[in-house]
Length: 188
Picture 1 (spheres, rainbow, N blue to C red):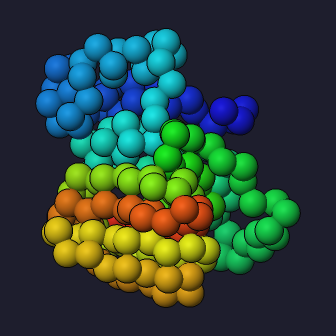
Picture 2: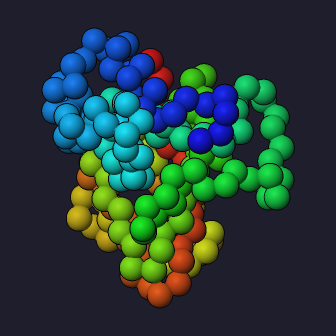
Picture 3: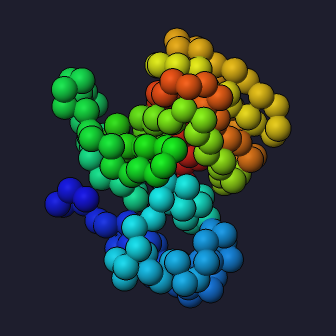
């Protein structure tokens, strides 16, 4: 991870402390085993993208809190040139995700850039009530499932959906799929 950003384990430990959750409570809410959560907190295990999504969802926290490299949303106008886009920050065999703009508390927005390998699939549990996601495909063909209904999206197409229900992203082709994910969390 880049210097200046908390490691996922540090962020997990901090969120647990803020909520006064035991490892058992965090495991129950995230669907990630107590042993794995402990290993992540101690830096003994590097979580996959799927595991980080489960943790973020269980804590009702923005995904970008767990990864580095995004441009902060501190100013109204921030220009990001393609050569300065973040390197992939979290990788798994099938999915790579990076924060393009880190979570903005004022707007309740998180913006990620995501890549799925050929045949790759990523399943997401329901986010907290009121979360809306916008997916914009920039390369390839993405099959997005929301409540078991499939939406095939080609490059240049987008879908806005209520993410407080189970959803999944599937690359059914032999070419990579790239897309942006703009997640809007309810303001607190």
